[in-house]
Length: 467
Image (cartoon, rainbow, N blue to C red; front, side, top):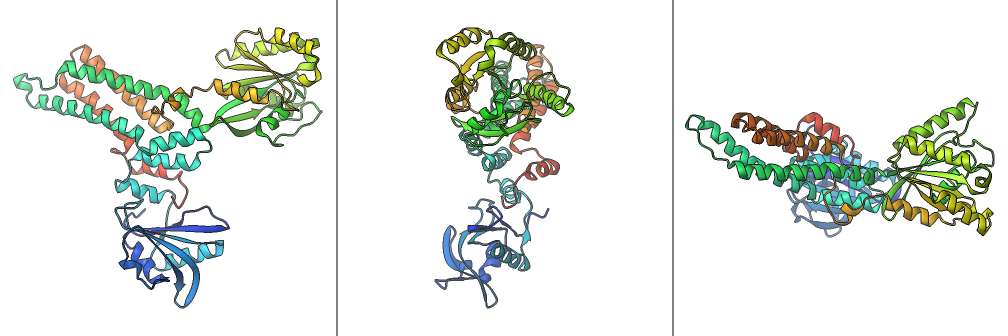
């Protein structure tokens, strides 16, 4: 795409609304919009200072298209680093398109997806990891994912990477300098200090790599599989958790033939609940496929809720324990919550007996609930929160959420480990320099100091148009 022309796009969601914002950015942004805007104050916005607002009309020759508010931003003090105009018009889709088409006729080009943020990156307003955080911020659906995106957009992650890269680059320069004086056998880079730096970089990189397991699930939602025999109340529990009629509830066993997913926020953390087909022996081909998918979803889930009918447990307790054992044996590391539903149908003595039988199952937690009345649902939500490691988030530590960053960090750590091994075996400076250069390359990939058109195309293609 051309990056030295002037672009235009709708910056707010498409469709009718109270207002809409049309963004124009590029060298001719102000000169294109100025003749089309008649200010109430009679001022020419081409001569007005940056960061000012002006009320007036957008006109096409003698035709008034809409009364608008125009915001002026002179580069480089703008989001893109270029001259930028934002037109706040009325939210009619007709008005939006009429103004955009007018601007295109006057010399603007329709922006590609993410092109405003791409220009911001190319003009040095933000690095690549910060630019990617913009997309994460737009798509954030809960407090935790919003907090992570804001931290990354403010540069917390990239500043840490840049600092490590700068220190490593200083030592790399000294080692490269040694190569120029190889015949004189001099040592500019203090090997003890370099060893300390490498150990520190290893520690930081490993911490960042480990944080991805937390960051990824917080960003995408913690998957929780709800499993159990048919007609035990899985769909009712899902509806109670979501506080809406999302899943079909029926007394007919096997109603849920496929997985149903939905997400809610608990304590600022997103949980993605998966209501699966019931586990039982069946000759129904469609239901059998659903049961197979149940075990696939268990393997993908971070937490498993095994839901059973409390009223049936007194007569079928051994069967339930066998099913619980199957899941626990197949997925021993997954947190398992045994939830006894329909406890509103039991007496106090039966509830106490249930507690004795299920509360003693090793490697799991037990909760009595009534999905129908909502009793115990809040306790279940709190139990789910206990399984999420939010300590790093609460302490405002850097958490990696982007799989591209994660892969680059892994590669950088691999190269740093090679440098460490080279130092331990007194490897020559020229060979050390090769591994250091590779580590620096992977650091640069994260912040965008080293990039290519394909990488930028893949990243910004995921943005919405107008951002």
